[in-house]
Image (cartoon, rainbow, N blue to C red; front, side):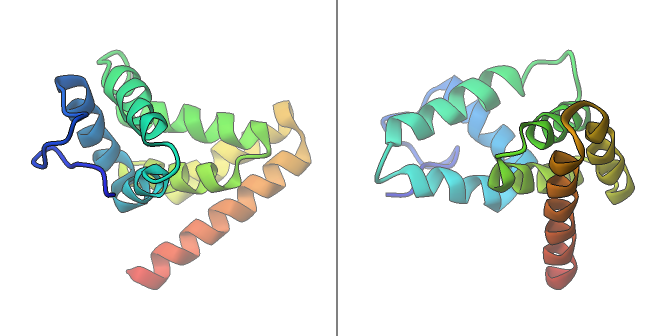
Length: 138
C-alpha cells in the first residue's frame, strides 16, 4: 500500500497531510517516500503522523528556511549517535535544500564538541556513504 502523493487521494488526504507530503518530497525526495511506504503495512497511522506533524506542521513554518532546519536536524541526529539511517536521509535532505558537502562535514565535526568523538565519527562515516551514493548516481 503506497501512500498518496498530493494528486492521489487517500483517506488521509487533508490540507495538513498534503502540505506535509509536499514538504517531505521537497526535502527528502524519494528517500522520504521510501520511509513512508515502508511503514504502510506495519504502521500506516504512524506514517500519516510522520507526514502531518514534522513535515506538515513544523517544517512548513516560515520562521526558518529549509537549509537552516536541515542543519539542525543533521546536528541533532549526529549528536544522538544511534540514528544512522535517519541521519543519512537528512544528510541527503540537507544537500537537497542547499547545504554543501563541506557544510555538512563541518556540522558533524562541530558535534564532536557536544556529543563526543564517537558520535562525530559515526556521522562522518554516514556522510561519506551519502556522498558516495550521490556520486554513484550522478
